Length: 312
Image (tube, rainbow, N blue to C red; front, top):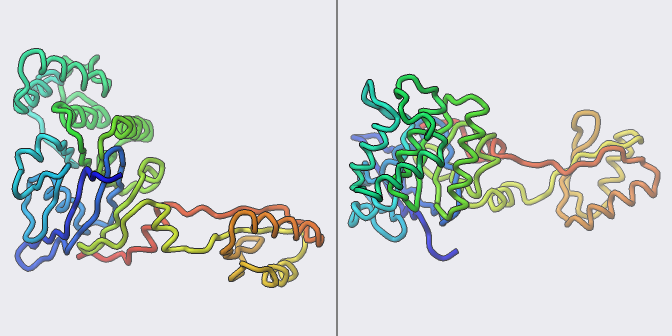
């Protein structure tokens, strides 16, 4: 992909003597969901607010489909939808009134406004709740309402700041399906969350930030290859572990072996064919492999490997 939906170019932001964001750079492409992860106080929300034209960087720039937040903020706002981690609504306001207010604020008129309201209400499942008071909505439905408001002007890029916070498991699954559907339409998405297990099933790439600095960015596979160039495999055999360990260390591509649970884990730098040959060899020499599993690495492993648990 040659055209980026979002390009964050070495932005820095200070609040008095506090350095909140320090030369942050990463990109998100159309149709891609990028997970923006980091501990509290890492600089996620500040970066998102700069990208949404709500704050200005002290240095650097952000562009959305080539439009600069510094030079062309109005054009950026037309192409971008920002869903904050919390939002307010007037009391005694219905779902329909809330969405209609923002549709008018976006400059939508006549049939275009009606079509936009019908579309976002149908897409988010709020059409049946049009006359309901916002105060009476569940947390999940309020999040859907905020997402619907964000989509009214059909932005090409979405920034979602902790959209799943406080949602029950079903609501999180439903929100995840909506976000995936938006990416499938070709929209780029930057999403932050502390629920890493939810992001691992959703994102195409990640950007990890700590103390205001990017610690790693790219697809999950790219980062995993840098963090762990070798495959980690768990093995349990009928033969005793000492015998199996000696046999493993005699094999090519096995770089280290250590005990794990009631078996052994070893690092392997060969390909899948070489791994299959190793299993076949162990069967042939009578070690009796009964459990053999390459170990997957998830976002929590990546996060813990790249961060130290400190705040800026």
